[in-house]
Length: 318
Ligand code: B12
Image (cartoon, rainbow, N blue to C red; front, side):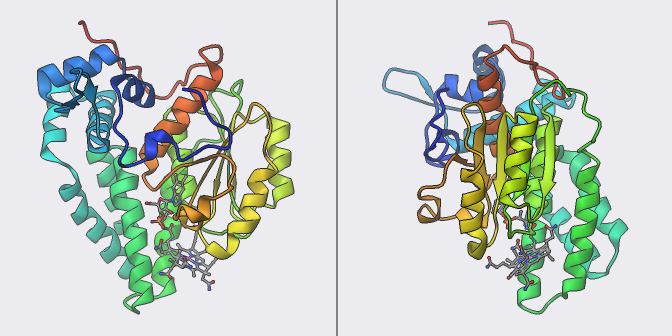
C-alpha cells in the first residue's frame, strides 16, 4: 500500500469505494484465505463478483468483516460471530444510547458508565465507541442546542466518557521500543473525545500512542514528533474557526518517515480538505483505526515490532 504523503482521501475510507480481497486483507489484517472461507462457510459477507469473477467488497461488507474479526478476537467461535453479524447490531445499540442520554439527563454518572460498559461487553470497544459513545454525545449536543439539556449534563457525560476511555489507554507502554503515534487536537480545539477514542482503539490494536490532547500549540506538536521520532501523527480539529491553525500545525509535522492523518468536523467537506497535508480519516473511528494500523504496519514493512494487543487471526485451511 503506497501512501501518497499529500494524500487523497484514504481509498480505504471512500464510502463508495469497491475493494479487492487484497485491500480488505491489508485493511483488516486478516489473511485472504480466511476471508474466502468465512464467505464459503458462513456467508460473511456475500461479496459481489467482478466480470472476471473476482470478489469485490463494499463498505458494508468491510463493516461486517470487521465485526466478524473483532468478535473472533474477543473469543466468539466463528459460527457465532457470523450469526451476530447477520443479526445486525446497530438496532441493539440504540437502547444503550438512550440509556446514556437518560442517565446524563439525571446527572447519574454510574448510569452513563453502565451503558458504556454494557456496550463494551456486548460489542467490544470499536462498536461501543462508534455506535454508542459518539452518537450519544452528538445527540446530547443537539439536546443542548434545542434547550432540552444544560451544559451541566454535557460536562458530566463528557467527564464520564473521558474516564471510561482512559481505562484503555495505559501510560506504561508495553511496546516502548515502538516509534509512537502522536495524537493531538489543533491549537484552538478543545473537543478531544474523538481523539481519546482513537487512542483507545490504537492501543487495543497494540500501537504505542502519545496523547497531547486539547489546544496543543504547533511548536509543541512539532517538538513531540521530532523528539519521539513519531511514526505517525493524528490531528483532530472540530471547529471551522480552528481549521487554519490546525492545518499549519499539521504542516509543521511534515518529515520523511512520519505519516500524517487528520479528522474532525473542521474537515467534513472536500473543500475544507483542500491543501491539507496527510490522509483524511473520515467519520467512522474503527475504520480509521484499521487504516492507520495498515499504514503504520506498512511503514514498518515487517521490519519493526508487530502490534501486540490484538490476537492474530490464524490463517484458515484452504
Ligand atoms: C462535549 C462538547 C464540548 C466539550 C468538549 C470536552 C472534550 N474534552 O472533548 C466542551 C465543553 C469543552 C466544549 C466546548 C465548546 N463547544 Co462543544 N460540544 C461538545 C459536544 C456535546 C460533544 C463533542 C463530542 O465529543 N462529539 C462526539 C464527536 C467525536 O463526534 P462527532 O461530532 O459526530 O464527530 C464525528 C466526526 O467529526 C469524526 N471525528 C471527530 N473526532 C474524530 C477523531 C478521529 C481520530 C476520527 C478518525 C474522526 C473523528 O467522527 C465523528 C463520528 O462520526 C458537541 C456536540 C456534537 N454534535 O458533537 C458540542 C459542539 C461540538 N460544541 C460546540 C461549540 C460551539 C463549543 C464552544 C465554542 C462553546 C462555547 N461557546 O464555548 C466551545 C469551543 C471550545 C473549543 N475551542 O474547541 C458546537 C460546535 C458547532 C460548530 N460550529 O461546529 C457543538 C456541535 C454543540 C452545538 N450543538 O452547537 N464542547
